[in-house]
Image (cartoon, rainbow, N blue to C red; front, side):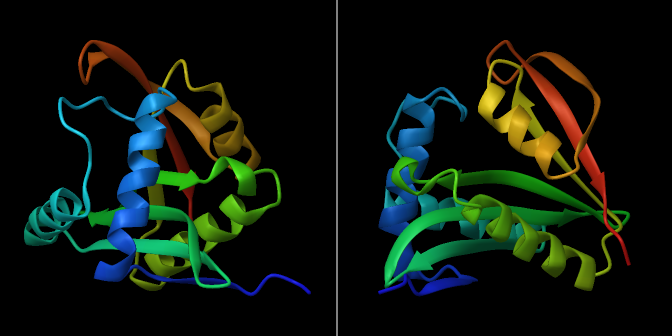
Length: 161
């Protein structure tokens, strides 16, 4: 039996699963550390805050009704999208699922008029850097001593029309 894979917009029912993935990403050193653990309610509050300032989106990777990954992103001024985070559960990696999830996010941004997308990745996060390269992102520069004195690599990708 093959897996039924859907990429869809996140609903409030997905937030506990996504919060768990964010906490796992923090444990693995890929996401900004916070004093408190991410919860469904704190994630809902974050999303509400983001939507007050930007067109903000979250998509989930749903396999047979189980959320196995997510991507969140927004539109900035000037037709630029910003990839905030992407995470695929470890037991679902290396199967092209992250690439499919990213492609759906880029398609949505492109359809909304974005011509470019940017992301920031910790310089120490080599799996994320390899993913960016594989997906056609290029390094634009570095932000030194940002986000708790970490160095971030700025990645970007031009979106084809």
